[in-house]
Image (cartoon, rainbow, N blue to C red; front, top):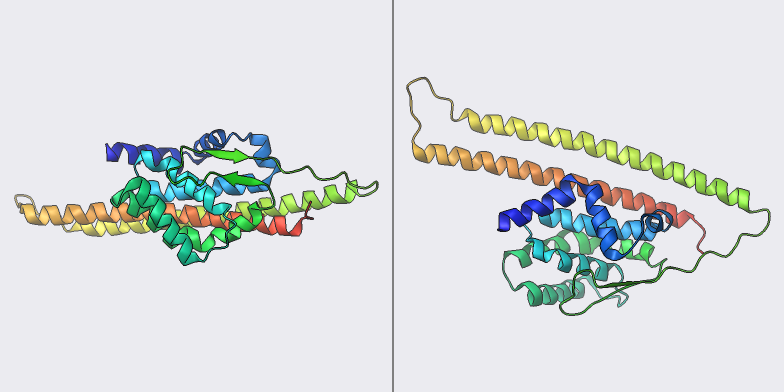
Length: 264
């Protein structure tokens, strides 16, 4: 059962990220147009997707998905200014309250402590440009979120429309160039990782090369197979982490674009 749930998560959020984003967007009650015109919504989706990609590669059960999504969104919009240590302690209490102290809880806490919490204030700073609240109940229901659309920008003064449109065009071009560069670098790195994994696997399997008529004892066979499986799992995790790092870089590029835009 655990293997099936893990595979389902991996297939949805790792192998089909576009579908995963669509599912999350629908669960939040957002439209595709809103995410295109309000960058903070796209950032929120990226943050949640990163969390789920990481956890799914480590066997997170399907039933944990709503909790992980709710915790991520709650972190993004936490306004209590707690220290990182206090945030982690609060997260640990909530996760253990929902999942107990078994492996699923450890998987969730490992991600937040090692990857997400050190960065979440950066993403939250951008997202606070929009009005967004999330339920922080001790046992949050699936994606129990309340969304308020930010107030529209006031109309531009006469004569400023062309200049503003030109700035937006340049910003969009810079962002597109950055995204192409990051995605290209990520694909190159992932191919390198896969190649390194294949090389390591060949070295491991070379230990099974025997002459015709020879046999391999069960202990040696089991050892080689365990090592081969370990190499393949490690390669898959490294590729997934490379994708997460690329998404973080894309989010930073979007933050730079937001910072250079006039605040409504």
